[in-house]
Length: 120
Length: 107
Image (cartoon, rainbow over all chains, first blue to last red; front, side):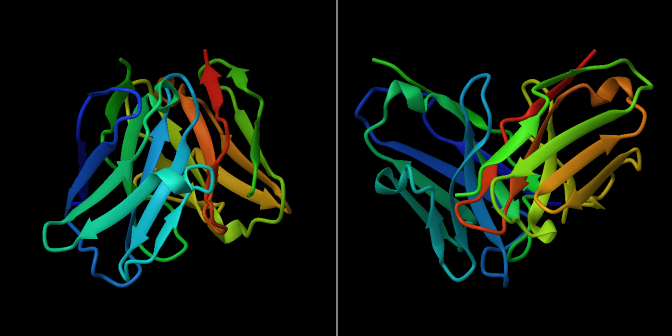
């Protein structure tokens, strides 16, 4: 049974750095082909792919947010951490982490999401 | 990046009717790398279809997907009350991965 759960602050101030943690179970990020991604969704809007890390620590980022994002994995803790610098109100969104079972595959399991509001 | 354009934005139908949702890619996308997700209010997206036409585990056979060039289609043969939701397509063959803007299927 694969599960993922996002955690982190619900409210951050503009210019602050957001740190979100995805804690997962039911799979290992050291298994060949496996990856975990972060996706966000502003209220009432579409999904936006942010970043991904795979089993060999290859990392990919959204080009539009590349300079602000860092994704890291801790295989021993079954966690993936996303940091986003210089937060702005437009970054208010529900942030999801999701599991990819193999290279070039879909996201088959998602966390419940965590709403992050950026406001002073 | 690959832009996915979904149409229509909103589809107003009744239970029992057939729903046809479109997702058009701005450039070539391998049909092996296209997925459809369903999202209900307050919930995370749920995988329906991957590889353009393969139903995910536990997905009823009233959901089907097809591909023709850069055009992808999700069909719901007979709408059930629980199918009224927002549907997103996603391509995962080219980085950055991208999602469409969604189609809302409403009563």
